[in-house]
Amino acid sequence: MKSKIVLLGPPGSGKGTQGEKLSAELGYTRLSTGDMLREAVRKSTPLGLKAKEYMDSGRLVPNDLIIGLMKEKIAQVDGGVIFDGFPRTVEQADALAKEIDVDLAINLDVDDEELMVRLTERRTCPECNCVFHLVYNPPKKAGICDKCGCELYHRDDDTEATVRNRLKVYRENTFPLIEYYEKLGKLVTIMGKGEIDEIFAQVEKAVR
Ligand code: AMP
Figure 1 (cartoon, rainbow, N blue to C red):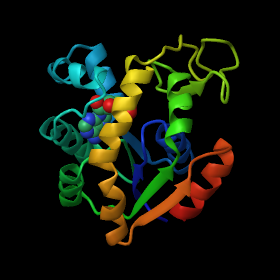
Figure 2 (cartoon, rainbow, N blue to C red; figure 1 turned 45 degrees about the vertical axis):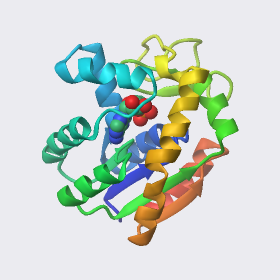
Figure 3 (cartoon, rainbow, N blue to C red; figure 1 turned 30 degrees about the horizontal axis):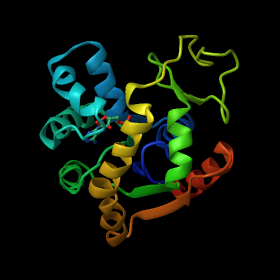
């Protein structure tokens, strides 16, 4: 069983959803840099104050801030770990390689048109970070998180203009990581379009 897993794929490709399911099933720790940063912004920590303007415009937060944050989190993890949204640059991947031996990179492949629909209609729980889609995966009660009962919100960076920029940033900075992990013989690409459970079945297969 693979236990050090990186989830790759553009914003909206399902990294959070599939990472959550995998973490629940295997008891692995899910480390999401996006969730950590949003929490830091909410709490107005020094990191949050620095990260906010990058996040709001869909740009990447500088490598040194992210790498420092991840090193701290990795040091606290015991057992299997799923990285969601990290690494996002080759520099981050190199830094990660110095900390742990990644044994699988799952690339969730979804086309831009689908990503745009997913992200602009996405609603997120500020408390437990669960995500819903108004059409494809609506919460049982409108506007309320199924898992913890909190009010869902529309992320500031899930608007059409910012999503376009995030997709551009993904292509320029993160897309090269597909080749990076392929060269290491660690890459599995999964079509990320379709039913959540069907995609998860393939994710599980890759991990076993
Ligand atoms: P996400 O929730 O993964 O889509 O991340 C939301 C935003 O947080 C991104 O658009 C970036 O501004 C920032 N972010 C998250 N992870 C990283 C990372 N590994 N490197 C740089 N910025 C990041």
